[in-house]
Length: 179
Image (cartoon, rainbow, N blue to C red; front, top):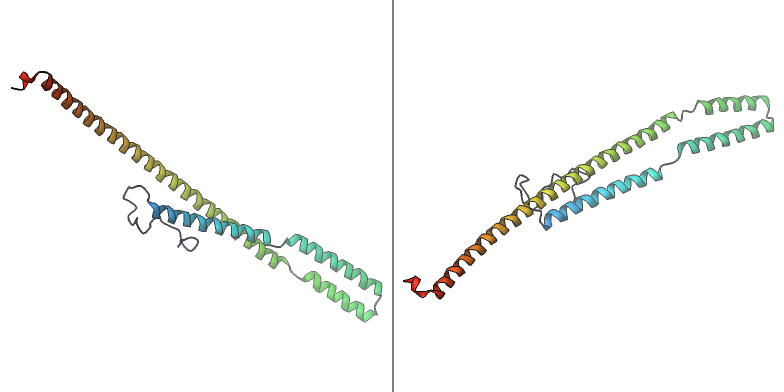
């Protein structure tokens, strides 16, 4: 079960409780890492989807202003009685006083928070990627060192076997030397 986005994964798995122990990753490590990456990618994609679903505030405001201007033009053409015209003028003042800035600021704040979350996720992904690359490099170096050690040991064993064979050949060719 992925830790992200509820918490940040520290690299521990069911088989890796001590992060100070240097050993190659096993299947469980890779499964957990893939789960965390999948969870992070899903979260980022859902954030991107929310950004696309957000309304275009400027377009909505422009459409509302256009509709208001059309309504005002129609009201002026009606030539209402003086008392009704006063009420319409009051209504027009109230409409102008309606403050859409609060909604605009709320949406702007939401976009800013979403941007900050996205930046945080990008940084977390970059850090995770660097950690994985570092761990893979350590694994590659360890494997190279183990192979080099194995080659040295095999060469030493091979040389010892060669020496034993040469000694046996000498004894078989000159049996008098064995006495």
